[in-house]
Amino acid sequence: MHFTARDLTRTRVADGADPLWETVLSLHSLRECRAEPALAPWRQHAVRHGPGPLRTLLPLVPKHGYFPDFLTPFAALDGVEPGLEAVMSTPRSRLRTELTLLSGHRALPGWARGIGDGEPAALRHLARSLRTYHHLAIAPSWPRIAGRVGADRALRAHALGQSGAEAMLRTFGPVMRWRPPVLEVDYPVERELFLQGRGLVLVPSYFCRDEPVALVDDALPPVLVYPAAGAGSPDAGPAAATSRTATAEGPRFRFSGSEALRDVPSLIGARAAARTAGRRR
Image: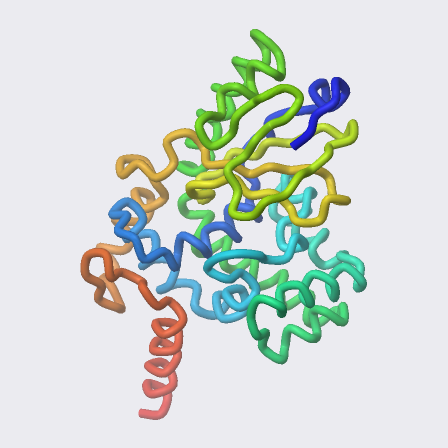
């Protein structure tokens, strides 16, 4: 990322966790195969309570690689509902372009065409799926997510207030390295972004894992989402907020060790089949 002097004056850390970035990035954590005990109860909770919206969201957010920028609009920094309004207001040309790009990486279900065509009913269904999944899987853990993000933001804000933007940018190692006037970022693909006086909004995230994430479309307001300091430690993750609930209700699926939620889509299908069988009795 190439900065000018104007970019440095316009660079800031977001005021708090972004609900749609957390919602979308949690879909990656939901399907990770690696053992991460702190997230196991949260994963069970998310699958148990959110199979309906997951059937819509998982095809749009692959386990790895590209997902559409329109799922994480800048307006979501102001809250879930402003973000969902922005999703539903995405221009048709952009919807089609981003879904075409996604289809180059994976086959999309037929209903995705309605989103690409900007059909109001399809966009309302997408917004409803995001809202429902956030309400069921993310909102119960929001105090802990917000606490982790708030602690990270305080760290960056202190450096910014005491010594300026360049000092703050030096606090992000080792995944980001400030080598004036360039911020080098560990990223899955090689790319360069020229901020051109627009500045940069840095968004700490609980569910961002390992490497920062940026929007693909360089024309959009520059945003860099990065793992909040301490994210992933077993003592303070979203799992803690849901573990008692999961224990009290009892698991509807059984998992063991690192195999937990290895294949989320098959679990969703199994649960749907179980409900159908129950109705037939």
